[in-house]
Image (cartoon, rainbow, N blue to C red; front, side):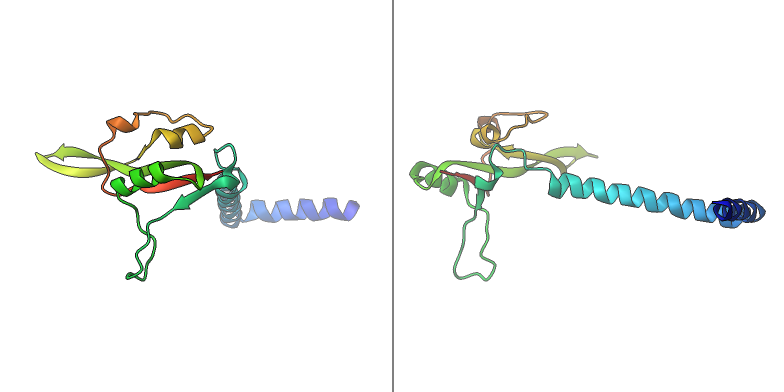
Length: 154
C-alpha cells in the first residue's frame, strides 16, 4: 500500500511539472468519455430498446416488386395500397406511410423543405404505443404518389 501512495505522489508531481501534457491527457480522456457515452446512447436507443409497438415481432413491411427490375423493393402506389387493404386476408391490418415535406417560399421561389414529418394512415397510429407530437388524420394528408406499407400479422 505504501508503494501505491508513493507512485500516486510521484505521478502528481510529474503532472504538475508538465502542464501541457496534463492538459492534453485530460482532454483526450474527456473526448473518450464523451464519445463512449454518445455511442452507447445511440446503441441503446436504436438497438436495445423495443420498438414502440405492442408486439413488434408481428410487424412486417410489405413492398411492391417488379420482376423486370433488379432492385425488387419499391414503394407501392396509393391505389395499390387501397386494393391491398380491401382484399387483405393474411394480415390483421395494413397501414401506409409516406415521408411528407413542406413547401416554403424563400425569395418568392417555392422550395421543398425536408421536415422529418411522416404522413400515416390511422391504422399505423393505432398500432403504436406512443402518441405522435403533432398529428393530422389521413384524410388531411395529400394523396401520396408512393406509399410504404406496414402490416400486422394475424
